[in-house]
Amino acid sequence: MYQSTAHSKIKLAIFDLDGTLLNTIEDLGRACNFALASCGCPERDLGEYNRLVGRGIYNLFRGALPEGRKSEEMVLKMKSFFIPYYNMHKTDFTRPYPGIEDMLHSLEKCGIALAVASNKYQEGTEALVKRFFGERRFLKILGQRDGMPIKPDPDIVHEIENAYRNTCGDISPHEVLYAGDSDVDMETGLNAGVVTAGVLWGFRPEEELKSRHPHILADSPAALLEKIREWNPEMLLKQLY
Image 1 (spheres, helix red, strand yellow):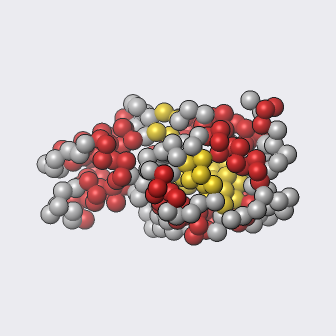
Image 2: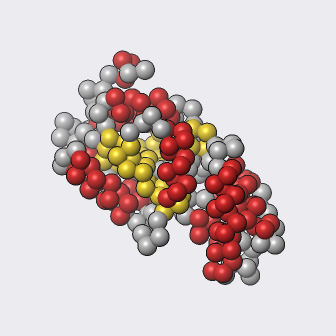
Image 3: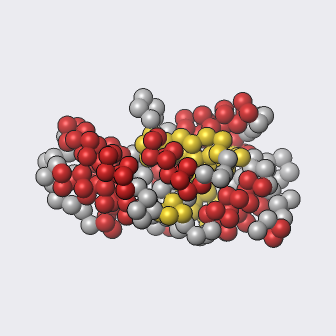
């Protein structure tokens, strides 16, 4: 467990997108069901998508396709239907979780750099962050990109750390927080050697997050902000709202 000392303040907070900053599950599920139906496959119950999302769209399609039809040809066919539909409908039901905007505002006002690291495809990640958090200044907004490993590979975190060094100055892993709602997110943060925060308001159960032994568990954005304060005791939260 990292200790909250004057020598290990959080300088950079990196967030997962789906299930962490935004509740995207209904739009994702409806788009995947459209793609399934377009490929002649049975649709899934929307409740199933809480377990299927979070590992990139190709793994989403592999999980959603019925047994016997999980070929790479079908995965690519699913993508050809999913992307255009999702691009048109990605904000039909998607909204930030309550308290997210206040949390981001407070972190930014305290001088903590913000970034997004998602397994959602890059175009969709950028569009949703711009749509819902356009007033915030994010150091980097990174999603799934062709030729780049997806989470839980830590490269996406290291890429953001390097961007911080190039624009803000030196930073150590103990000064970086990665927050997400799934086992993949917890493994990403642990693989990167940073402070890892599991958020309990997202798509996955508490037991899944606890099994990866994150440094922080928070049941609301306000609670996460309070936990970050333990690393940054000079944050006077009551003055920030």
